[in-house]
Image (cartoon, rainbow, N blue to C red; front, side, top):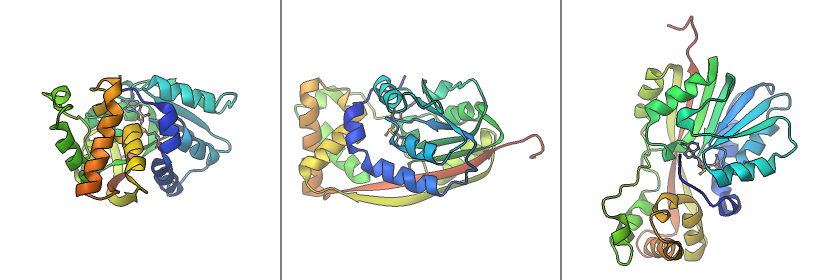
Length: 261
Ligand SMILES: C[S@@+](CC[C@H](N)C(=O)[O-])C[C@H]1O[C@@H](n2cnc3c(N)ncnc32)[C@H](O)[C@@H]1O
């Protein structure tokens, strides 16, 4: 199972992800009556926008995190058009074939994309669409540099010895090849730069803690998590500036049908 999240902090601080999710969704053609999976739905902020595009359709909102699934469950309580499931996307089984699988800000948390794309394809109708946005090549390299520096410092270094962050920000050609091998055709993949400024060091630290550093913070005792995020924000402010250099990778593909070659 994937790692745990602090759903309340994510809900409060996920404005950049919601904004990109909304933009990305705006570029996807939907009739309005489809069954759409939101793969890695988080607390459901983007899922809600997706539901707004489906007046006669349904959403299956899937996430592996207990806190996120509980938050999404509360958000959609009494909404018969949304089913919320706690599942690992690598073993996805929604019990029906979806018309579309949609996903934002999730795939870079999952190292094995060959296995991920095969699992997604199994839950799509032939001819169904995969539309996903995640971190792509070059994503948050400024944070990465500051982070590596802080991980080498006391009192944190002992907690990271022999550990490697498994987050992966793929290049478009890498994903194109994997999608084609996993049964998709008409594959498109391209990078978009989304530089995101923060008002000050403290705002950056809170954001890093809630969103970017989840895997790192799980290595640390609770009392060291905030100081770690503050140390990364402090190093960024000093050496890199208060802007996160986000790079998104947009992917669009169609699941092969019998008459596709
Ligand atoms: C940054 S949040 C994105 C949430 C939402 N899609 C958005 O754009 O705001 C990433 C989500 O992916 C989920 N996730 C990561 N790995 C997963 C996996 N293997 N299976 C299911 N969900 C996963 C996390 O639990 C988290 O809720």
